Length: 144
Image (tube, rainbow, N blue to C red; front, side):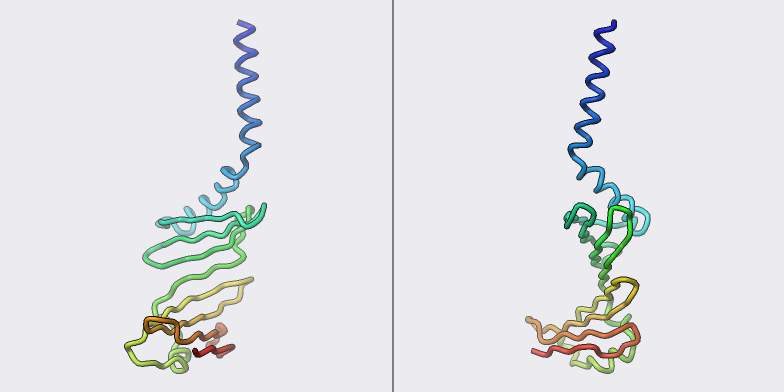
């Protein structure tokens, strides 16, 4: 009986040491928990560990593409969200005025609490990029 008890204790101790040796699984739980709370319908989740304390996460939620940089404490340092062109502020639409045959790829980027609008213009290939602040002021333009 004592031998069985010792074997069980050794097994449990070795199992807990193995869990410590593979911290990636437990660290990934932070990302899962955050996504479950904030994006419950997330799918196609891909995560990459950038450093010991930071994950880069890409996923689809409600037909929108998201990119997050999230720490192990659950703090989001960077968020990039796909938007529909009709959701872009009107003053941005006035600056980026192209014919309807062009496609608009519009993202909202949040970094340290600041919001930016990034607009890409495509027609089979990238034709131009625009960066705006949260008020719709043009910060940079690169037309190819």
